[in-house]
Image (cartoon, protein in one colour):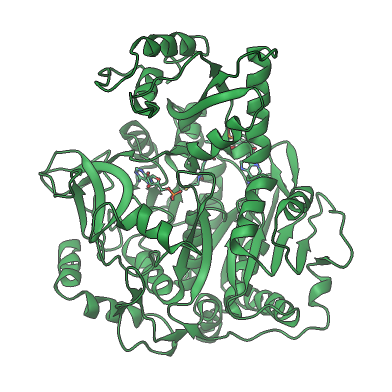
Length: 630
Ligand code: COA
Ligand code: AMP
């Protein structure tokens, strides 16, 4: 069957389609139905009983794949490589799961995981899944405050962390960040489990911090605990419009079924193949395509601790692909832009044998046609843009390489995947004709694997995603479809920006800037950046009588964002202005400011309070190099 037949077969009978896909999963009790009419948007496979870890690990050992590599850790930063077979992974996961259970962690308890790109991060996630605990992974580039916010929201019984992460030229000590976060949080975990890395020994707090190895002494390995299909597999916080992130819930049954389907049909991966997503376990790409999907599919996954450039050079990606025989490679366009900038003629590519590589997949931000073209020219494999979000957990739109490669149109992530009825809507919620820009929405119900609601925040779930367009899920992206139905994703409709494939909230940054005693008012926008896609840019209005110099205030707010949100926010530039442009009703005109920063043409909004302010903004931006930077 080609893509169109597959999509049509889903449209004709979604229930039968998903029940059929669910048969690729090992259930302790098979679901009697696919979609259950319960919860705010329905729930998938709710009466089935299943275990994620069984499907990702044990069933492959049982099927004779015990000696096949499950995880390859490749760390150019430490110049080390390690292979873990499915058999070894089962032992490690069961061991940690047993220790967690012996310390009181059980079904539904939350466990925060704060780990860098080491196999133990996956072991921790799978150990939670094994005993029905709900993990909440926090990205290592987030600062103590962001971790504290997530501790308060997830209310974990335990936190599993490593002693440090490694950035090029810098050891990031996690333990002081963790200690500060626990001090700041109102919720207190019962205990922590610390994995000591050779690069840094963390100081332990007696009675609270337990060593990863010690904690497993004398406890029994745990078996897989079957959980209901709608049991939360994990919570993953993602940026919304405010400083309070949204806790996206992933339900167990739908997650297993959707990821299993995607590995073969989108990424073209069979059991035994090697798949590599160069992202981080702290993001959704890392959850779905570093940890779960490749393992559920019985493939080998690569855990890469390094950067596209500088560890040690722009040939790292190609070296990893050659050394480990990677068949499908997934990264963010920004990573390819970083490589292209250092190696414009692809000379490093020529040094490696990439005959194993069959396709490159890009997601996380818009894939610009130049980057796609460069990768196609030099890698000589299909370069596939696909579009999705933390909320969906897998691709909304893609070129289904494993079914058939559809004609590639650069700038488009191609067509919707089965399960997604994507519509472009006008403000009133009516579908618009091809070629017309509108809000991108998905007709309910969403497919398996997508979020059933937000953690502890059903009202926010409804307000953020359902209320604006009744009967639809609002993606927060704007775009259009062409006459062939190909989707084009153009912009966010909210205050979320995308910096080097990392989703960040300008609202959260504004909250940090407002906290500075000299700042009366502020705004943060995402300005175009040729490497990172977007870069945050701050505007500050100072309080009357402030004696500090503008430069000093800017320096201090830059440091504040780094300390409170984290280095990953990449907040480096701010300007002091007298006034912010606003509408007569007081709304800051961020979109117009963004156009000025990007050097794009714009119409002065009819509702603007005082148009002269736009000239002041343009002048201030010139002092920090905008718009030339984009
Ligand atoms: N722990 C601690 N700090 C981290 C971190 C982590 N896990 N990840 C990033 N940081 C820090 C970096 O060290 C950097 O700090 P600095 O300001 O001191 O230099 C800062 O956060 C910004 O990091 P990053 O976004 O990685 O930018 P960069 O300038 O170091 O590198 C790229 C630029 C394009 C090479 C890099 O962003 C990249 O590899 N992007 C791919 C993104 C990706 O895979 N996204 C996932 C979505 S699919
Ligand atoms: P995240 O939840 O971090 O995965 O970020 C999701 C957001 O990133 C989407 O809503 C889009 O705004 C953007 N995004 C992800 N993939 C793409 C893509 N292929 N093209 C355009 N934008 C994308």
